[in-house]
Length: 94
Ligand SMILES: [Zn+2]
Image (tube, rainbow, N blue to C red):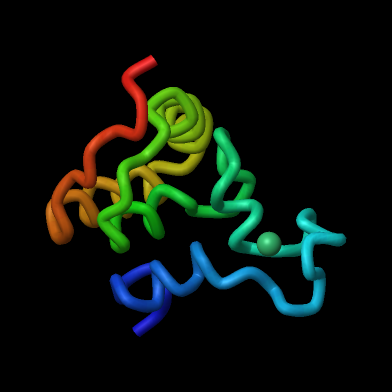
């Protein structure tokens, strides 16, 4: 089990800010990186899907299009996640 496959761990990863930074070092905090309009965190769609959290649509489409150009396993992983956990919906449609 990891945060990518366990909904509880995925949610914890998203909402638990590193106690070290206390608002001073958001660049090194996973929760901060995951909560940007365009999440700056490797494989963020997998975490969002596992946590069933609506995803920012534009960021999702951009990142998946980018990553899947040279990494079909990344795309397959996303498809597998959608099949297993269902689509969490979109945060915004724009
Ligand atoms: Zn943070």
